[in-house]
Length: 343
Image 1 (tube, helix red, strand yellow):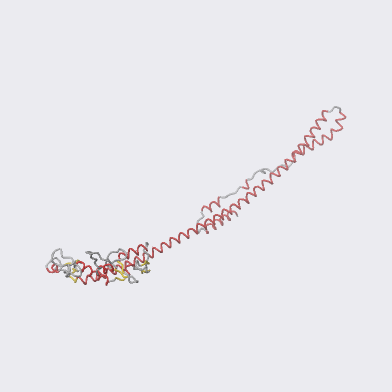
Image 2: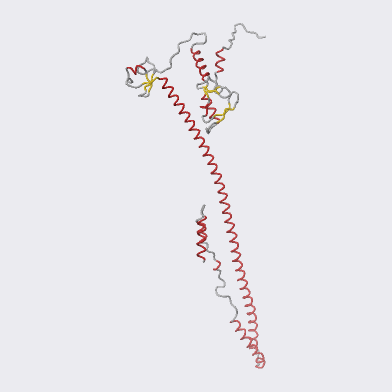
C-alpha cells in the first residue's frame, strides 16, 4: 500500500516529456539534430552521429561499410555513398520542429506565440526580408533593392526556385563527391594490394637470387677442389720422382765412398807385388764409377716449376662483374668470345 506524505505533490510525467525521450538520439543522448536519418531497422539517428559511428568502424573510409544500430544491434550495410545514402526521416524532423515551437510557446496550455521569422533581413532596408534572388549578381536580395536599390537593372528570380535548384545541384555534387571518394577508396585498396604483391614478389626474387648464388658458390667450390687436387697430384708425383733420384744418388755416393776408401788403402799398403795384384781391378772400378757419375740421370730443366698450373680468372671476373637481371644474352656472348680466343 502506497502512503503519500501530506503536502507532497508528485507530478505525473507529461506527454511532452515522453515525446522528448522518444526524440532523443541513442548516441549523443540529446534531441535529434537535423538531418535525421532512418536505418533499415526503423530506428533513427542524427546524421552527424551516424557519420561518426560509420567513421569509427571504417577508419580507411573504403567504398561502403558496415556498422551496427546502437539501439537493436542490427547490422547496417552502406553503399558507396556511405551515410549520405541513408533516407532522411522528414516526419521526425517535422515533429522536432513542432516540439520546439511548442516549447518556445510555453507549453501546451499557453496560447501560441507568433512565430519569429528566422529569415535574414536586407542590410540596406532593415524592414525588408530577403525574398528574391539577383541572377545577374548571383546574390539574394529584397524587393526594395530591385525597385529602388542597386539591383534595379538586374534580372531576378524567385528565391524558392533558386533555392531548390541550387539545393539539387549541391545534392548532386555531394553524390558525385561520394562517388569520387568511392573510386579513390577503391584505388587506395588497389594500391595497398599492389604494395603487398610487390613485397611478396620481392621476397620471392630475393630467395631465388640467393639460391642462384648458392649454386654458383657450390660450382666454384667444386671446381676449386678439383683444381687443388690436380695441383696436389702433380706435386706428389714430382716429389716422389725427386726422392727416387735422391735415393739412387745416395746409394751411388755410398758405393763411391767405399771404393774411394778401398783405393786409398791400396795406395797406403806397402809392396809393389800386393799393389799390382789389385791395382788393375781398382783402377777399372774407379774409372767406371767416375764415368757413371757424369752420366747420372738428372731432372729436366724447370722440373720444379708449377707455372703451368696458374689459373687465369680475368675473363670470368669480367663476366661476373657484368652479371645482372635478365643478362643471359651477355653471358652467352662472353662465353662465345672466350671460346673463340681459346681456338
